[in-house]
Image 1 (tube, helix red, strand yellow):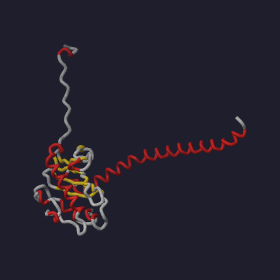
Image 2 (image 1 turned 180 degrees about the horizontal axis):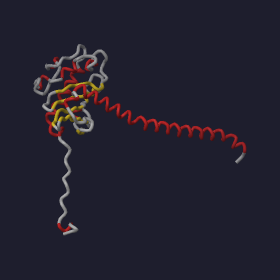
Image 3 (image 1 turned 120 degrees about the vertical axis):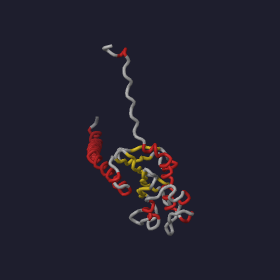
Image 4 (image 1 turned 45 degrees about the horizontal axis):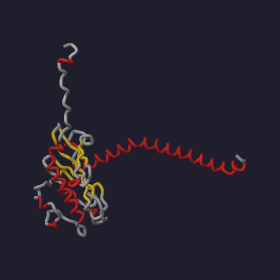
Length: 227
């Protein structure tokens, strides 16, 4: 190998080696940073979810851990997502309420994700908006901090009002719409109605306890070493 060849390519090789070293160090630091913060991020997410649920379901109403007493359901037609986690609230092992998070794609500007608390008797504990992209000053009035409209679902149920009353007033229902924004509240009302109907139809499945494993059958006499 000639001296000229070495002089020409040695700086390139050194630069490549230095870049490789920095890449390895950077990847290691990112990995360590993620590991050190992953648990904290997960805890923050759990705390945020509990705060959202506490806004619609008072913690004193139940004594179990909502984040572990859950069931996964696949009900895209009713709840909007391919898979939905349902949180079950119980007190003294009695069913109290379920918290569902339906998604409606019928918003004016995209998906609207809700959280809906339903007491065991089918009455709405409360509804809140988790995420949306609705127009500021119009559709964003579905947020509690923007308007009290969303609070009006508490105490409602299928039959209170009657099913045909579960619509905005412009469509002949009992729920107000916003001036200049009918699509957004219409989508939310329809999503809550579908969620209530799903709950009413699948209540037993929603609150079902985990199946208790069947104990193994006792060994027969031929398996008894003392027989």
